[in-house]
Length: 437
Image (tube, helix red, strand yellow):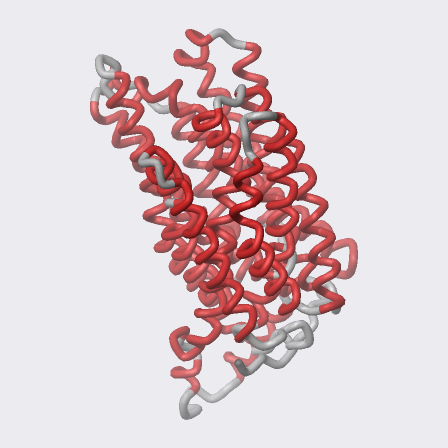
């Protein structure tokens, strides 16, 4: 694959760059907080938005609304990516945060089924549609921004911080859930306690919106914008070169890396504690504690992998991820037996391998596209792969395990890892590529 030529981002100095990094990642943390808090509190607020006379159907309907968020994520990825390439990364990230904060506040303050009937369900669905669109564009655009704002030789490390913010969001949601469930009775949680969780996300989201409005636009985008304004409008092929489909190799790289990454992320970081409880009888407190320890470990592992990827290159890290999961998926899964020690050990091994990919994939995504289509090229294929492979992983795992074919799911994981491995073998090394117009 042909690599692109470079532009180094220096705008605003070291202090300004650090504040921008914090602002983007703080917003990304809250995006994932809102995404996770919905699933954690769905059993409590289901009957508030759907017919309370049928609690089981209400819960299923609430989870169906959660799934709608995954359906709209690809659309959000393409819309927000295109907007970021046209209007700027800062504006796209600001709008995404605005929709996320608004969605949380609407859910926190929404009327119940008993007061407005089916209109309550419509309000919940509308809020989740907005959040799903924003969530689809958030990750791709934030990674694009972070990599473009990174100093020379630190693109993988800066891009890897986006995954740190993702995990911090899930940790924050888990801790909020533990705090509220231990402080309030079940009746209080079902009546009004769940609103506090969404209210916290909404209020913090407004602060994140304030921070994002003060972001510095990236040099790469500003230079491209100036070049477009000064260039003649009749340059042959200029409009054609801006079309994303002309960069199909980059699209395949983003999609291929995202297949294995999204499946492993949702399997090991999101669903594995639930799997241990459902199929191995592990106590919830034991599984959640193991998960929290493993997530904290993952934060450091991603940063270490990003630092290493800036020195040894992206290809070795991607290949190491693929080889590790192809070789160890079955034995690591078989370790889990319902005990704290085996779950923690298995998660530490799996998340260490996942960190190899997540430490560099953000940099690779940005490095395979020119500035004019970079945000679209990252956000679109990433959100599509996540919706297809990541969002369905817990369901496929549960369905196959209940049918007595858990080994089939393990082979599915190996195939997903192999797709990413092949992508890593075929792609060009991009560490020395420059971010160009």
